Length: 221
Image 1 (tube, rainbow, N blue to C red):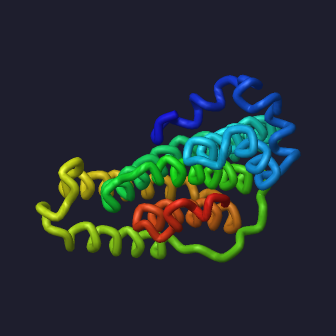
Image 2 (cartoon, rainbow, N blue to C red; image 1 turned 45 degrees about the horizontal axis):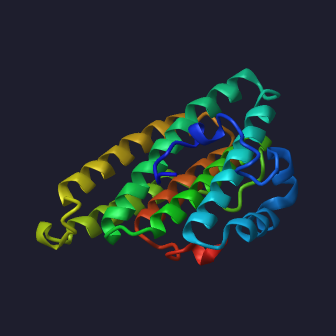
């Protein structure tokens, strides 16, 4: 499974052979830790095995979120439908930046799969209206993007891995800013707790691009 394969593709249908007989509801009932241990116990605690465990858990969360969302108001359903593809695109773009900034490596497959789980956990919080951990403001995310831009610009073109160009990475960051503005436009219509969850996800994406997260996410979430 490629790093940037959209989660929508993964969630389109479930092959129980791939999940060793576990349906989405069973995966979620196990919880992340037990599911992770079960799956990697079958497939091995390799980058591939750990990434697949994450992807399938994210897929199960998406399945659950889509079902639960049907009980929400039509306005909130529309807002979530607007936000999720923006989350997906922001996630993909920041992962691409992080991969380029760090010089690449298979660790980004694992980081990407972990971010897919974070994305659907954020959607779950929006669906459930869960209380946010901490208040968030738009400027905090914008400042993090400014810092990332300075870090990218501080390296001369000749310092970059030949696979990537600094100009391309800066262009991707511009895309992130544009995506973030679209996210904020929707977040302004949400209550404070839901808005905080949205902004926290965006901040997390930028922080991952800056490679603040452990390289292999400590093998577990």
